[in-house]
Image 1: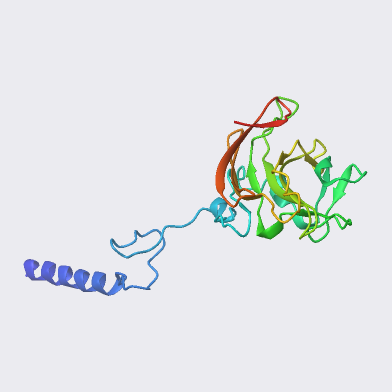
Image 2: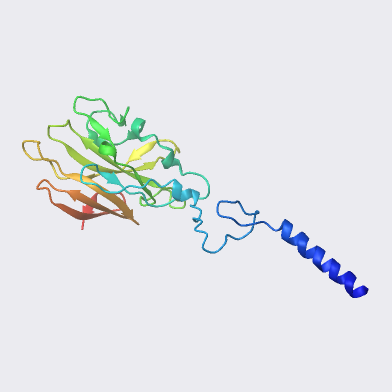
Length: 231
């Protein structure tokens, strides 16, 4: 009798467990915390910092920058909040003009000989590659952006512009630029930066020369505050 009672209890427990255990069919959500079945093909989650990194394949028609570095912690760095098409940059003498601050509106400074911010679909590059003062200040990300001076069909020139946030926490300040080669005498051929990235304190670029050939160039700061030299 006792043996029969125990057998009945075991059978009841087995039936109950079978009814309550979740069935793992493809497409069904598993209970929280349960492991994914082997071979389910479920993709790994992408970190939020990676989603903030724009993808930038280099092309021969649109100069594009590839981002490096990540935001610190869960907050976006101040430089990444920049509205580049409508930014005001202090000390950008490459664009000409007498004003100390170059103001862009919809990607152009609006002058007769315009300076355009991030032309051809180019994107900014981020990283900690410029010297910060004072020396014990928390490290902040800097930006490297492409700027083009001149009208289409005329003599034009491109430059990579390192930009950092000023000590007031809001001003965008330009550092010495990396100039591209001057255009041809007729202005019909222009050297373009087709890609650029930051490797520590070094800027690595791919350029399309006036003769149509491409080459890789590397630049480093000649001193603490520039200028940039090719090596």
